[in-house]
Image 1 (cartoon, rainbow, N blue to C red):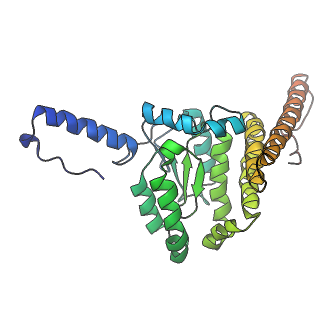
Image 2: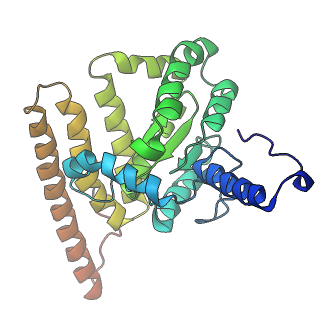
Length: 292
């Protein structure tokens, strides 16, 4: 939080300038009140941090490995576009009943918000929030700020999505985690289960499945096809964690190959449907979901 800088009449012109610079810098970093959401809104569930070129540059540097693994420069690029926000906002509207209390922070470091939500979020029982949520939040949201180190993720103890990648499938995937948790009666227990081997694979599958199924349902071809290419190798990284290096990379490579094969098949089928429509044939408006 910012400290008082004294009354204006007691400061020199230089002190006023320094105070203004500090205020803008802290506000941009998320330590002060966040300005209204302007990407597609204002949208009541989304907050956005101001661009800070030096900090965002560092974030891109620290995310080079993930960019290479997923073969996409937009991974954790700390420059989420209005188009990506629009896809996410539309999803939140679609799932408004289940995700009414979800918060989304786009490229923002605001630990005071996370700690406040940790205290207020009653849908996870307090023992889980205290024993699991507090250390998780302190480490992932306070001590290791995603504003620098990236890492798109969903924190179930604060019910907050943290987004740093300009990729709509990743945004839907993280929101898909929130949707998955919203279906659970005992959310704290569901979060605890992730410490068991294989539980993370199940939860990641549910989030990926939600992202792709939703894209198919609303006929968003671009997001669907991109989802195969980015979410499948991302899933491979979770499988790869169960193997020693470099064998874990095999799962990522398989994810790339499988995802791109499905994307090519779906794109070809879409082209066939479009061609049939142009010829005036009666064809279905959507194509069947392929085995994933």
